[in-house]
Amino acid sequence: MASPPLPLNLMPNEASPEWLNKGDNAWQLTAATLVGIQSVPGLVILYGSIVKKKWAVNSAFMALYAFAAVLVCWVGWGYQMSFGNLHIHFLGRPDVALNEKFLLNQTFNGYYLPNATMVYFQFVFAAITLILIAGALLGRMNFHAWMLFVPLWLTFSYTICAFSIWSPNGWLSKMGIIDYSGGYVIHLSSGVAGFTAAYWVGPRALKHRERFPPNNILLMLAGAGLLWMGWIGFNGGDPYTVSTDASLAVLNTHVCTATSLLMWLLLDILFFGKPSVIGANQGMITGLVCITPAAGQRRFGGLVVVGLRFAIVVVWVCVLGGCHEIRWCGFVFWVVAMRFGGVGLGLPAWVWVCRRGYGGFGWLPWDSVAWVWICRRGLWWVWVCQRGLWWVWVAGVGIVGFGWAGMGVGVVQGWAAILMGIMSGSIPWFTMMVLHKRIWLLKQVDDTYAVFHTHAVAGSLGGLLAGLFAEPKLCRLFYGETSSWERNVGIFYGLHNSNTKAGLRQMGIQCLGIVFVVVLNIVTTSIVCFVVSYVVPLRLSEDELQTGDDAIHGEEAYALWGDGEKERFMSSKHNLTYGDNFPSKGEVQMA
Picture 1 (tube, rainbow, N blue to C red):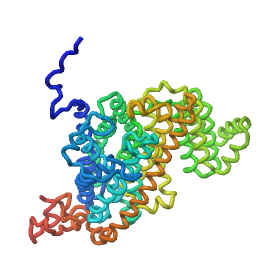
Picture 2 (cartoon, rainbow, N blue to C red):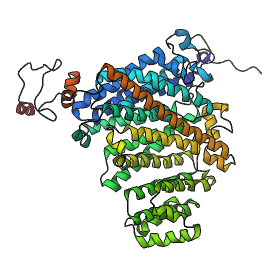
Picture 3 (spheres, rainbow, N blue to C red):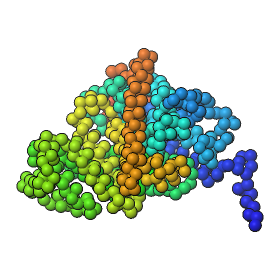
Picture 4 (tube, rainbow, N blue to C red):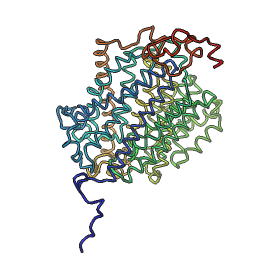
């Protein structure tokens, strides 16, 4: 029986060829626009409000300039270097992506989209990467140096990373690396590059590092909200089709982000006594970043993640403490985690520990329980505890999940995202609030918006978790039939199904990806900064650092004087409303 004819609006024609899927194309353009809104106006507003008011214009304009400059470079040569034909081992052949014939043809990998849509979609990802780097440099980088840095870094760093990981011809892509939506290409890259560039530009003055309050927290929240909602396109658009995988990615993104925000907020309250709005904003970002590498590929046992969560607590106890009793406390917490993890009672284990003296670090309860375990398991752990080797405990507690991986297979993706959010709200918090004050290098580098912690740390965490919990079925939804039983298998899934070798291989690839991205960005960013410094200074002059926006741009964010940074209105080529007769402070207040 002949099939019924298609409606006229679905019939192929010159503007809508037979291979084009109109629904996929419409969603892809929408998703790309949502990601673009993350940058403009999202990060423009966020950067303009998170800094002191004398830097509001400069910070916002760094983001706006990067968005425009990346677009021109992207269609000129960047897209083809990232997704075009192989040129050398790490890079595609430079070419213009403006040819009509090229733009109207079907894109790579058989997606039912035109190249024009793919160029636009990938552009907004490249743009936000550069804008994230700017977050580490706010308040001191010479704007002329930034104008040179953007095209150079895009050309010699981003394109190499994107081609290696995302292009079908990339060497890491062929190995089977999992980076669903840019945990490596975007977040790890921007975090490491921003940290490296901040090292070369130098720190702000000590008084500004110690006190750098936002000029408008409400606008900061507005920018953060646009960033959060824009992530629907960030993760939901990466299957390149209107599919169940896209729906799963969007839901996981929101669940993980909300959980991470709440976790960060809880830690701020517990350790500092006050719910920090800025801290909640950071927690939101770490959740978004952490879920990005595998938003649509994760379906894992909650007990595994509970085991890893215990590892985080052990680190806190051991590092924040320092006395023998507190180290024992961490050791016994490991014991409790091991004993309760088998039956999936993570929360009761937490309650059990807290009710027995966790807050006061009581010695006798910990001592008695610890010796029970020691008598059963031998004295090796005693040696570990006595020497405060907390990093060994971290590895040990992470292994708790291995034994119980199969018990949580039925945990739905939403719950998995919640547990993942707990980690993304905890580990970056720990690196920012604790390790940042203890590690010499972190103290020396002035990362204005903590891009290293919120993007590099969270991006690495997400990539490693993808290596732990990736499930072949969900990976096939994203990668297609190329994802076989020997590819894209997380360690825990492999252990549960007697395919440990494939799981270990996947984790090795994920670790290799981290090493590659880190080394690449340290080297290329350093070279770019070195080259730019020969043309213009990387850092603003002392006079410009003192004055801010008016000295750099001849403009200010707020048309008020006599209130805040400057007690007197200083004339510039753009601020001559009153000529030479400036009103007094009292007159301004009366007005």
